[in-house]
Amino acid sequence: MPSARYHSGMTSDPTASLRTQVRQAVEAAWQRAQADLVPAGDATAPTAPPAPAPGAPPAPAAPAEPVIIERPADQTRGDFASSIALKLAKPHRRPPMVIAAAIAAQIITTATDPRSPIAAVEVAPPGFLNIRLSDAALAATAARVIADQGTWGQVTVENPERINVEFVSANPTGPLHIGNARGAFSGDLLCRVLTAAGHTVEREYYFNDFGSQVKNLGASIVAIREGTEIPEDGYRGDYVYDIAKELPAAVLEGAIQSGDDPTWAVGRWASEQVRSGIEASLEHLGCHFDVWRSESTLHNDGWVAKAIERLRAAGDVYEEDGAVVFRSTKFGDDKDRVILRSTDDAAPTYFAADIGYLVEKFSRGYQRIIFIWGEDHHGYVARVKAAAESLGLDRDQVQMILTAWVRFVRDGKEISMSKRSGDFITLDELLDEIGVDAARWFFASRAASSGIDFDIELAKKQSNENPVYYVQYAHARIASILRKAADSGMAAPSADDPRLLELLAGILPGAPEAQLVRQIVRLPEVVEDAAASEETHGITAYAADLATAFHAFYRDARVVDSDEPDRSAARLALVAATKTTLANALALLGISAPEQM
Image (cartoon, rainbow, N blue to C red; front, side):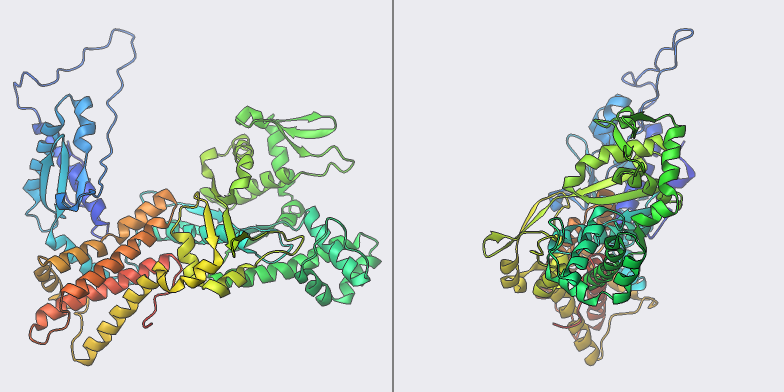
């Protein structure tokens, strides 16, 4: 018997994407169709399975098949398509075409309901359902864009989570360079998409102020101040000399008088100066962080020690040659990992700090943690997941996204990336050369796992032809149209205008309007797909498609015509909905939507 949720065949959430509404309508139709699928007395009907032998386990129930709704490659076949009948054929022992016809018949019975998103459905061999949206549903969605401009495109996933996303996390030993760019863009874009999908997302930057790199930075600055040679493993960039000039004499004197190694104190002071610069660079990029966490606080606050004790309590550590080792092979790692070194002070390893970080993060109540790392960190995935499992966590709650490297090229030569030598281009320099919007579009339009060759000079020369400007121009062009319409005394109807739905529905049979509105209504499903795949290149492709659809519409339809005020008002409403949709798609990418260009 169908559940109450699907009894009417209509979605219970009118703000859901049209794809979701169609899926729910198909699910409801299938539930109703099952009772009538096989007429009474049909000899071909599947017989009941034989009763199990005494003592035998019951036969497993046929798994429920999820209804997948897709956009067909050939748009002449309809707005959506589903192959659910093909999947249901085997467990229900009926031909796919018979099942598809039964579902279609049930959909047709509700097609006249004004709440139905479906106007027509066709059955195509070998059992596809080709579905066409109703003009009423399209008009209602376009009206929703006008009414909910600020939230249009946002969705709510079935199980929203509180998610921590850690990204960039470059060591605070020098300014962010273009080698850090991919992690910064990928992390920021992912956080925007997950938030738009209804998750609660907190962005985190983890900086290493506890390791030897910070000590080496301090040693480099001390050497510069004292006029001695910089150590071999020190840092030599111009920025190091600039920091050395800014070092307060009291910091160095106090470090020397303490009797401790002054390079640590100077290094930690310097790392804070670098961190301030990193924050400024990320703000330039349009990327903010909610939490800044240092490795030293994990040790000072006891999180590393707590994590090791939890591993001991689980029986997953042992001692070998004076070192304490985590038995990570028990959980699928390729070898066991040292967590306390065989030194007099039993110093914890970097991995021990990583385990402490897991415990500390989950203590804050996150349901999922995402680390965005470069692809060279692939070896860390198994060991961190192993630690999570030993700690009693669900290893699937700990997720790693590995980004492919970007090869930056200038004048045909690959740019070297070395903080120690100081031979690098900073992120700020890249953004100043090509612009924040162009850079964001460039990274958003490629899957994070895809390698990129980025020719900086070529990007600058082609900046005027960059797709981001094409999309931004569409937005600016619409703003100009709306301004000129207002100057002539015409405007799009407001959201509370009782004629809005009627006006929109009245123009949708027209080809230019029908094509444009079908692009507009796609934004929520594009967000759903981006959040599910944790990729953003679908959003850039969508924004470009919408810009193309608008330019075609404006070419073929006269928007402002004093002789047809109702048609003009309806077209202005569609244009205004396009403007909002473009702006919101660009906002998901962190890209500006200019009012004029």
